[in-house]
Image (tube, helix red, strand yellow):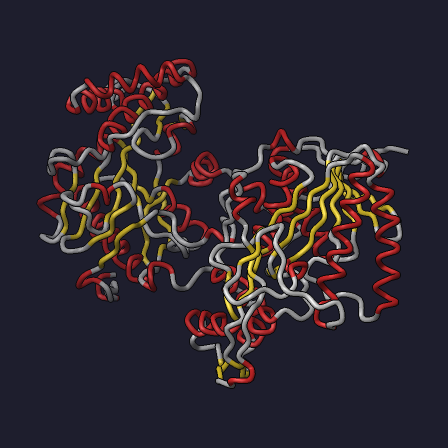
Length: 625
């Protein structure tokens, strides 16, 4: 009987931050459209509990994000059904069937056990291929290729050396049998099948029996001594993030009756190379030594060519190095926020100290002249959530009302130290930023965009933004916001000499705007932008909007939120924030106390060139407090 299941708690309430990171990977990837998985019934079959759970959670993430109404059920290899989430459904009503097989698992210990499993597997596959499902997907791995030559990277329909009598080849024949049975049964039943072969699968809180990556990671996490032999044998590795994204991508975006390989970025490595990576990233923890023994130097290994999957549009996201760092830190189980320690080549702490120095200068000037300002954006979020910088943040912002912003610009250049440049279109030819930036001389901190204009001052920057008034009525606000977006788009695209696009929408309007952009002088475009930002400057209204920042499309917010100031701790200093910071941050970020995923905690800007110059070891001294 079909009945409604009790709704599960959101993943955030059930998983730790490492599990949540990879469980949401497919949803975050941008490769899968929600409508392609909406209301699908997913039947998961296998004995690997951690892998089954991982796949189930990755589909649950769609339910959390957009109420996709995906239903999930488990089936054991003995055919026992266990409902999991959504609405109960009969297994023969499944839209997608996913078999975990023996992906990256040790094969059964004896020939009898192997045959027993294959018999059960064959009966199960013969049954599920009679279901009216869209696709049956089997997870496999690179052992199916046999022994590959040194440097050879296997494509889906290639094979290496093999030996029917060799014990070390049992896994190859076992995996081949699983794949062949599925293909034969699916063809006979006219059901579309897919096979996804992974590299050596790894990830935080994913069980693995004997993979060397787990042994090395645990050794480092526990500061244990170990000795390994140098080897040239290289294998491909696949993070659980990329494997889960690939599962969703295959089911929704790739044709059936095909085999695909998947591996992570920069993931063809030897054991020796992994040891080197561990020494580089955990110099105080890694006590693994490498020794040379000619007899133990081996060639071969299993490296996968994933070009076919990528040709269909799949993009892996995780590098082996990042995945290894995440794995080690998950095993250390420290009660601290995860961050990649090598961000900006180890310069992130110095960058944040420089930004703190900027903040103190701005605070001094504003106090001297009675200028009201607030911490803004990620800096405000960091103050509330971390009492300082967000650990991976690489910039800082303050915000002011228009009248305070104008006052600050009038006095700043005379008050700022000689080594700090106030960057405005009026102070630097060729600069068309809509808001003010402070830049430090003889440094370099250029983004992907500003690195195209190296004749501009590209020093370490600090952003100062104004929040401007907008209309009281919703329809007037919408017109004002859209006009502001249009004006800023014209200036930015003309400055960068790039085409105006809208994701394929409104092509005729975009073509018209591109023509206007080409013939309109920059001075006119900037006049239009300024006019839109200050359209309601001298009118009495109750609403503000982030006309200068990145949050235009969030609309307006009540001006009263920025009426009152309170002071909070930020890196040991007291700085002003809106008294109604909770309302403001909720408007800006939603559930602002939730941190970004673990694997995305590099930095927030696409910094292309960094040179801190004489400030490379800058620290704010206690004397300035």
